[in-house]
Image (cartoon, rainbow, N blue to C red; front, side, top):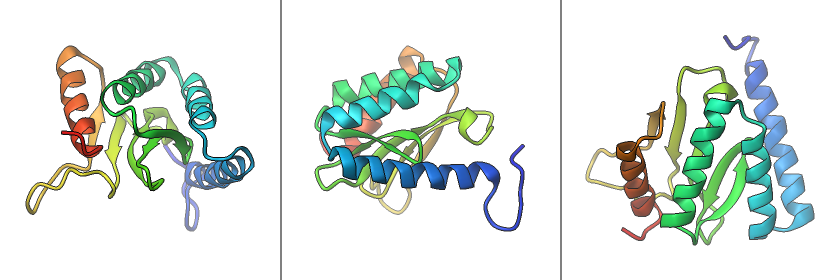
Length: 146
């Protein structure tokens, strides 16, 4: 369980520090695809086995169905941005905040609008052929190439 104090939990404070470090690293290295891919690979490699398998699958799916999205880390999560640098889709490992499931999330730049109600995140437990197809379709739509 996350230790709570006045304001942010310890895990949340660590995520904010991680984001500040990511911004400094991006500034130093530039916002290149190679730098983003390296940061995502390193973030995935640091995950526990179960989260790593899921993150590797998401990374593979994004590369296949939305190769124009730019990889980067965002609060320590693997994330993928549009041409304007806005996060479209991200993967949050269950271990990040000690939750019982990983999250596949979509930010405001995702083009998933569907009337008055649409999905912005999914709990993710396993990659199966069915979940991979659903994930690919959501990422394809989110990236604007449905």
